[in-house]
Image (cartoon, rainbow, N blue to C red; front, top):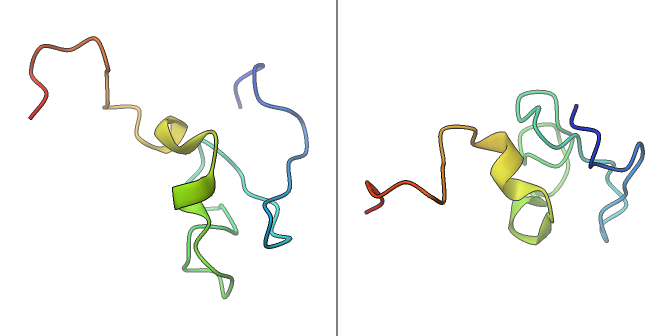
Length: 58
């Protein structure tokens, strides 16, 4: 996990997301909890292939 991410964060739904670990994240919508991805401040950490500086964006 990145050092810029607080050790423990809690979504407004009460779920404790795990940014950068989409398969294990309780907020991914596949673990029996509501999907919290849209509101997650660390959303892009789950998509390391996304590079905002890339010229090859859509």
